Length: 468
Image (tube, rainbow, N blue to C red; front, side):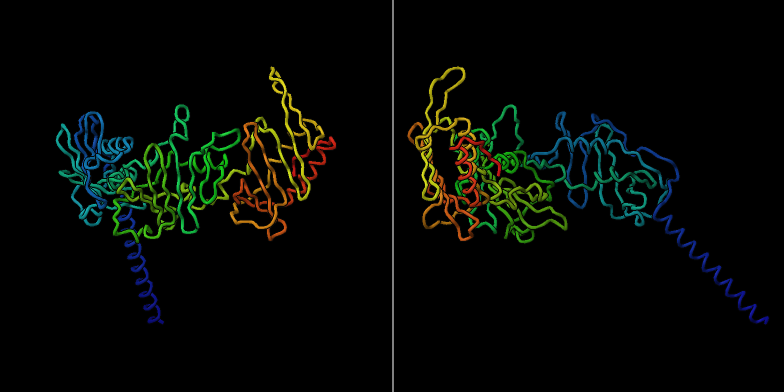
């Protein structure tokens, strides 16, 4: 019995020793990860911008200097590139007034805090002489950087937002705007942006967009597609897709681009090559592979030696097709310029003659006849607006055989004209639409039944219903 008690006592003693050792180790680790300030706070730097000549930064991203040039700050060595002045001023402001927590006021083991091989060295020169700071490792627990100051004993910690300026690449200061934004009050979009060519592996023909030769009318775009088909673009495409290129910008500059590294960034097999003519110059943007696990992609520009990243949602033409861009009306003849309309539906033909009288304050008085029968001019205007809405849903440039199931000829007062034809497709629910002899669109053939119905309403004096 005495032996069992002695053994139990020994086991308890061993357990107490192990527990104490474990507590000591955990406490030591906690102290290492989250050392507490021993002496409050102090100012590592406290200068006025007027006192400073230069701030030099050395880190793993490169060595560079922010220097005073008159009243402005410049990124030395990068004068040929447009720099975001606000970012330089923000960096200077943060580095000239650094408040720190005091960790130790006596010498310490620099290796433990990442200061044997610092993450960054910052040298500030001015009328006072110079001050040098060294940035150590980052403490995740306190979200702060360890730092020490040359010529002064002790270890300090500074907030993440301040320390990050010491480890930034010089490229973080580069302006990422590649096409200047438009000033809508003083500039015209069609004068700034004159052409776009989009090439992608999934496109049989490139998308080509240019300023339209004919002036824009109400509800029409000032731009037109010339490939894969020659049609007006929609207002939506002009305002959203095309218009978004004025102010086109990357998200970041990763560094210098080398042709020998093309495969590493997907530039040997680009996802898209977009050529934009703007402001009297032509720039080509090549979009490469995904940059990391997110939705950003690598990008290069023909007028720069830089490698950029850009979010996919800024690349409005990366997945766009001609079907997303065209104007939904095959033609838009101005009724005020039309002299006659010839409509053929199957074997039935109808000739609309438009005559106008007077030019007083109330405008011209319109008279309309259909195969010699006069119809209400207001009803005709409603029918005419529906006739323009030939159902088109997608681009279709296939050549159609046989006879058209519908043909509309618009003859203008100046003797010119336009023609729209509809041909049945293999899918009995669909029709191909041909404009002035060029196959361009595809839509629902049910539109023709609706035309017949509303034509009867016009001839019998019933209300025209343009909804279908």
